[in-house]
Amino acid sequence: MRPKITPRENELVMREDDFIVSKTDKTGVITYCNRIFMEFAKYEEKDLIGQQHNIIRHPDMPRCIFKLLWDTLHDKREINAYVKNLSSDGSYYWVFANVTSSYDDNGELKGYYSVRRKPEKQKLDKVKKLYKDLLNEEKKYGPKEGLQASERMLNNILQEQGKSYEEFIFSL
Image 1: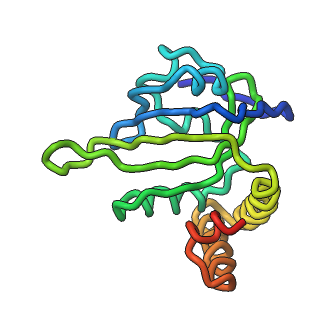
Image 2: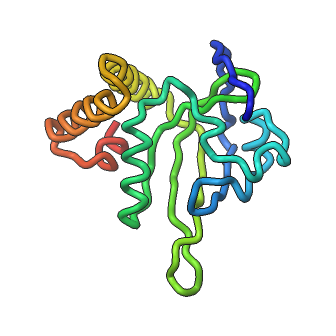
């Protein structure tokens, strides 16, 4: 079992030309990570390969966003999302992620591929508020009910805007 990391208020900011790249198997276990991933996550390659990708999950991330991500991928669609990640020293960093499924020559799912870049500040400010509201909704209830409540809140926002999640994210 890995030690619990205490988040702290130390933001790491990606450079304009940075791309964080990782690959996982179909269960979310990291099979590849690039140098920039290791730099921001503050892990060595040997500490990342073979670990669940959620090793970098920040507790400020609403669970409904990850549910949306996995639901979208299981529907064989790619997804773009803003994600706050946790470094091994408790620092955090925001990314704009594109996640796609990867298939073998027989069309069988073999894993996932993610490329992340520096998010635009104006868009990120809006996302931070949305995620804070979603997280507060989750915290009002127990684990299962909280997830359902934040998912309802997100779906209501999207419905009011008349947009899919993808359209909403790109319209910020």
